[in-house]
Structure formats: structure tokens, C-alpha cells
Amino acid sequence: MRKQQKITVKSYVHYRGELVEFKDLPPDVKEKAATELALRYFNTLFAGKAVFTVSDDPNGPRPGAGFYKTEEKEGANNGT
Image 1 (cartoon, rainbow, N blue to C red):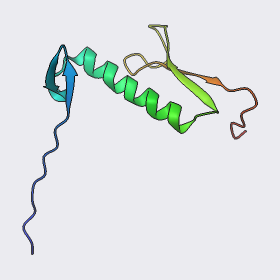
Image 2: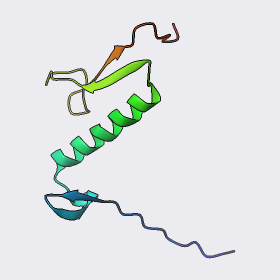
Image 3: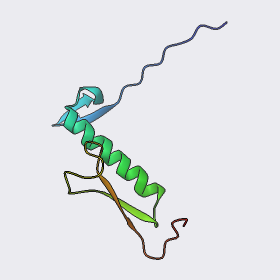
Image 4: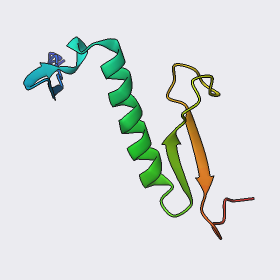
């Protein structure tokens, strides 16, 4: 049997003028980055049907998880 090769993946971001490994970012910056990635994903996935944004309500439906709300586009068929 062929020997398994270990693959290591690292991601880097620009933070305060320096290139920093994602895992070394402060927790609040990681959360903001993850929220931005999720928003971009969902807005692309549901383009023309809904718009996902970050809620201004700190007591939103999912505290600590990004607080998403949607606005349905007029005339969009949401599958119901």
C-alpha cells in the first residue's frame, strides 16, 4: 500500500499592514471575517431572491453566530 502523505493547508490575511496566519487573528476579527464570507456565499447563492445582511440587533436570533436577516426580493419565487 502506498504511504499516505500529510497535507497541511494554511491561510493568510492582511491584518494591520502585515500578513498574518488566519488562526493567529484575534477572535473578534475571525468572527467578522467568517461572517463576511458567509454573507458573500449566501448573497451569491440566493442572488435575485433574497438579500442577507448583518442585523443591528445585538439580541438577534443567533447571538454570537452572525445575526442574519433576509429581505425577500419583490416577485421572487421563494419555493412556497
